[in-house]
Image 1 (cartoon, rainbow, N blue to C red):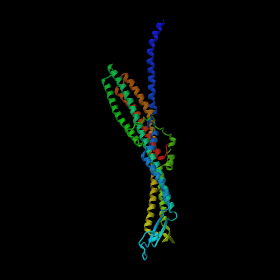
Image 2 (spheres, rainbow, N blue to C red):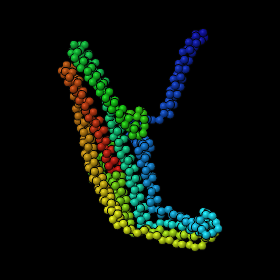
Image 3 (cartoon, one colour):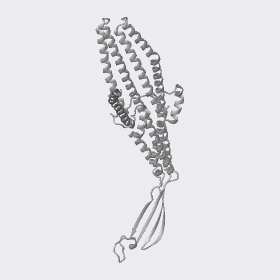
Image 4 (cartoon, rainbow, N blue to C red):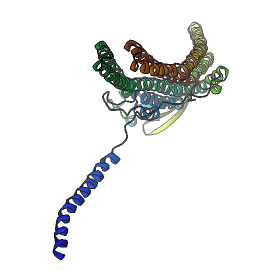
Length: 439
């Protein structure tokens, strides 16, 4: 009895030990495999927000505009500052004429030296006008930064919509290709049973070849969209992107009222703000041109040195005479023409943006309605048609061409829905660029 127990124990030990070792090895390999997966950062591209965050940090165009705006913010201080004073030295009788001495350049060894310090003083108000004009230019530069970002974000959102469309279309076509393979199997089975012609299976194979050709083009579209996205966010063109998991939800129709959006665009659009700032700068230049009718002053003080002492002091006042009336009036006319041009550009920008807003709103509404029709009417009807055609073909009541046509209707309905979604996203991006903020 004890011998039998020992035999059974000797038989079970070699079987259990390798199993335990194998389980431990599997767990260890899973643990090691999970470490790099956890350490590896997630790829961008799953949503558009991840790409916008990268673009804000890396895009060189946006970075250059920020640097230009930073440079423009430094100009008002120098524009309103006084000009640098000037210092002049006059050496008199350097030859020491009539004296028992050789020529010299040292002030203590010649007839005399005169030192003059002068400061130019613009007419009252000129410095303020120049500083305020520079401040308006700095505000225009800041507005260009915002306009650049809105333009860049619109391009990223539009490119992401195309990337989403291509990726989903590729997925959809692959699914339909699998369906065609199953339909080919049904046709082959019916042909083997003498219930259908061999032409049905051939048609299914031709349809699959056509869809594989479409897949090549769709894959090319996806790669182009990915390369465009990578370029916009300053990544290598071939850098991998995550599969687009989702697109942004559309705002409710109540937030897309034309009148309210026009008011927000006039108040927040940076392009309009840039033209408004330029108009203010041009107005200050008109004010400066009018102030140029008045003279500028230069004051100075001059101590005179004789040998080793200062023997006398002089004060100086210099006044510019604005005598060139024709050139001054030409500058005034130029400044006023520039002001009118700036105002016209502001009005043109406003009118153009309002037109673009109306066009984008109409496009968004059409895309929204198209998607709703495709999702609620066209797609369910196509699916019912396909199910009916499939049942009829299996029963020999419908030919294979009708089945193929029903399958194509489903594909077209889903593609129309995807196109409408992408179009709505691009129109929404345009509206947000015009309004100046996300909706």
